[in-house]
Amino acid sequence: MRIFIALTYYRPHYSGLTIYVERLARALAERGHRVTVLTSRYDPQLESHEVRDGVEVIRLNVLMRISKGVLMPAMPLWALKLARRADVVSLHVPQLDAAFISLISRWLGKPTLLTYHCDLRLPKGLIHKLANQVSHLANRLSALASHAIVTNTRDYAENSSFLQHYLKKLQVIPPPVTLPAIQQADVSAFRQKANILPGQRIIGMAARLAAEKGIEYLVQALPLVLQRHPHARVLFVGQYQDVFGEEVYARKLAPMIQELGEHWTFMGVLPPAEFAAFLRQAEVTVLPSLNSTESFGMVQIESMVCGTPVVASDLPGVRQPVLTTGMGRLVPVADAAALAEAIIAILDDPESYQGDPDRIAQEYASERVAALYESAFDSISRK
Image (cartoon, rainbow, N blue to C red; front, side, top):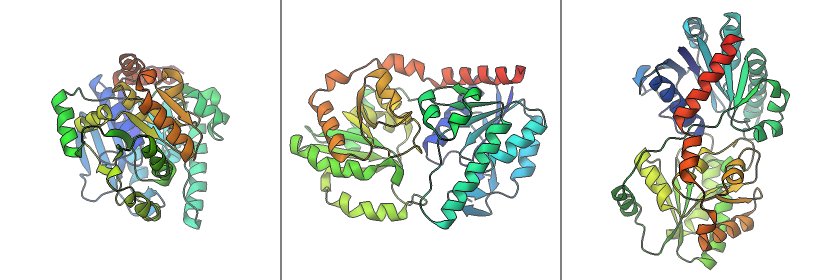
């Protein structure tokens, strides 16, 4: 099957959406499909055409940025070319170009599957407001033109002001999770790299330094945790410098984090083996997201597969990993005191939050998710 995938950003860009699509594309290619990804050349240093893990990646030059989106003049021509030769079209939104691609795919008679990752909520400002409106219109056109819509959980769809209008088209497919097998030597090497001392209680967080992630509530919660566990320490993994659109937020957080001293460490983006070692070394991971820009949080499943429980915000979709596995605690949104209480509860009694990591790994394995996408492609192709 020739599968054409389109999204705004692809690897090496770092976000949950790009990691999701990279895992899916690679798994589909491993199952024998010919997979082509059309995306932006958001960094001029990137190759315009390459093959990554058996996936053909075509990157188009960016003329200008519009908020967190990009304008690519060559997109219409390339989208028409790739859609014409594809057997199925897989679109991943938020993506401004999805509307045009879904419409021409429909015109060409190509089965089109739309994966809705999350609502888009941009900061205040005229440009961001305009981008929000354009994105919402693009999503509506894409949803109407697509033959089916995929999302992570029905919980999120039923609570989404956008998706609740398209429940008849909805197919629930869990996100793909892949972690490398690691040895004790990998964990030891990570401990040395992070300078983890005996007796330290490691709290992990993996995210971009972005306002919707609710990082300030972990910053506020940590002093309360330290009253009970004075050797607690946060390791923050992910991009924390030069995050596009988050410069003001980073400046706001900087003095607050500086006050925490040795109890907070930024680790940056880690390669897969080190990331898995980080999750195994943490005693609890935290996902204090604030709104519907977070629809699930794959890092929760990654953490649970490594045997590490999670504290997550009680948001639609985001709450499902804890509810279905019992491996963690849910807390109200934007509540530092409740967040601290939940972290302390897990540090006090980690055995009460142990689930079945092997079963979780099987349920979210990239190979299984790719097979579910195959079934979805076959279903809309028959229709």
